Image 1: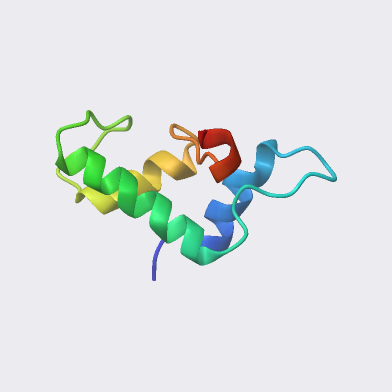
Image 2: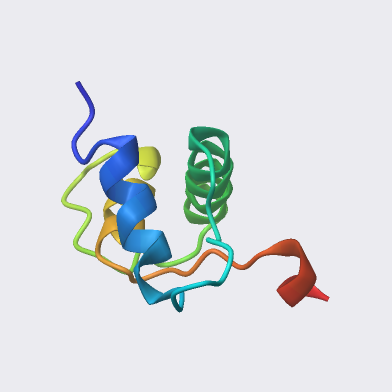
Length: 79
C-alpha cells in the first residue's frame, strides 16, 4: 500500500483552491503524471526538496508533493 494515498495527495494539492473554483487535480491520473514528472527531474539532477536518505526518486517526489514542497500547475496557468 502506498502512503500517502491518492486521495490524501489530492486533498493536499487541492487544499489551496478557493471554494467554488475548479480543483487543480481531479483524478489519480493527474497525481501519477505529476509525481512521475518530478521523479524524472530528480533523476536528471534536480536537488530533492525533502530529505531523501537513499529513497527512490518516485518516493521522494510523492513526499515532496504531500509536504507541499512542489506545486501542480494547471494547463491554463502554464502558459
